Image (cartoon, rainbow, N blue to C red; front, side, top):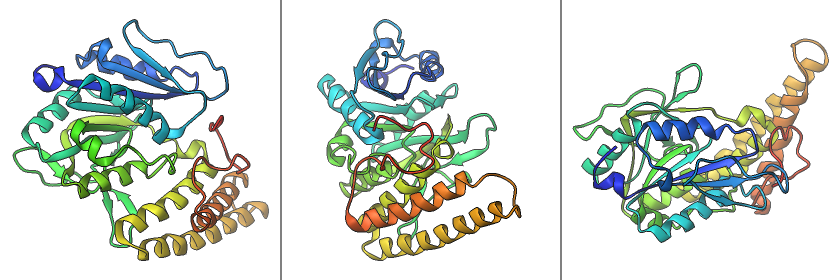
Length: 316
């Protein structure tokens, strides 16, 4: 990693809990030529008074008292690095992994395509290497999906999209100001889509640098209740902002179908027509139903602590 863009790069890593999963990510950053003093780690603790994560000397730590979710944690990091006068900020969650050359490819794209305010890498699933996202697309209904196939690109090697996954985001400092930080009412999930929407409406483009490859380990399956709740509630609000009120109508209608299907799965498992326990489909049904209701009630912030299937989510 070299050049003016690299010299003006700051890195924010968001960690959660005490598992130490961030160490592999930091190792991948050192291999890409990032210096310790360029990195700020924001720690969302899983329990009160959790010990600080072990970090190399020179890496700054910013510790939260509670689990503020993605939006709250990243905003703390953005507020801190704003004091450094940086041109670019790389936002990473602790389960991301940069493959060799990924950061150089992102920085080349930032230099060659200055119209892009937010850039992400092509994402593959950790372990399998299967494609996960070549950028996000917002449908006419306001619903979102990941693009799973590599799109055509021009000389700048950047593919335009509507949003990029929050696990790995390279953001221009000017675009951060235009996007006005992440909306902490979302807490987690869809906040990166909403941020990209605001950055785009401020006049920037959103894209994926297809030559940059990073690995991601999506965590929704570890917390099916909150995952279903937040995707439904936040997805409806994002759809409203993106396409107007026809968006929430589509999300709320789809939620009814999801709840019905999840309850059928519960019933099939109760009568032994399908293998497995009822915990996961029941958590999906309850989380989806309450997310749809709380969107209508305009209840924001972290998911309710009494949802089934909380999994690894705590101290929120």
